[in-house]
Image (cartoon, rainbow, N blue to C red; front, side, top):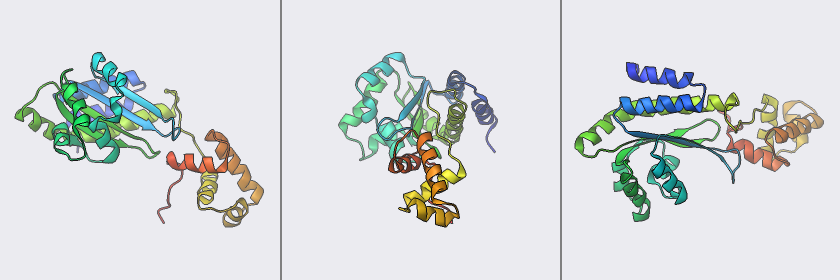
Length: 248
């Protein structure tokens, strides 16, 4: 059972009705667990080449501007860890990892000059293909700080899932400029068989409906996914987690 302060944070996150409210909850979490800053960032597969990006930042303005100007997202070890792994990591672990070279680690060194000395990155994943992280950082360094980070990591990793769930709820309710497509069960079935290489006629035979009905559902799915071809519809549906291998 989560500790009382974590339970309260989770409830507050799920009750958040705006990004501003969620920012406030994350700021509270940072303070309660002894951190100075936080950042949440996620990539939503609205498009393979132009995905929707959402950032909720509790970082200093000067660092945020520098980070964006230098396009540090391409190098940042915390971001790269969160894209390639699902386990949390302390920043001190990233310095010891063979995955990151001097240019990558220079981002963390520079962050320290802006008050982000050490911290933890918590990968988040969503059921619709989202990839992101929630990261907390401290302006202090030393063994006691690392011990506190290690101790807080499990609770904050759990909290990160609820923050992401809250963001997805805001997306679904139209509170953000990107809203994931919503397909009917039949539209998903038709796309699933199209992904397996079946023609509309073959899909109709499998599902017990006419070829014309299958074409109707595929066209509807393409319209909802904002694409113009069956191949694009399949690709985008897979990217957004709308169709996936069946469990049985």
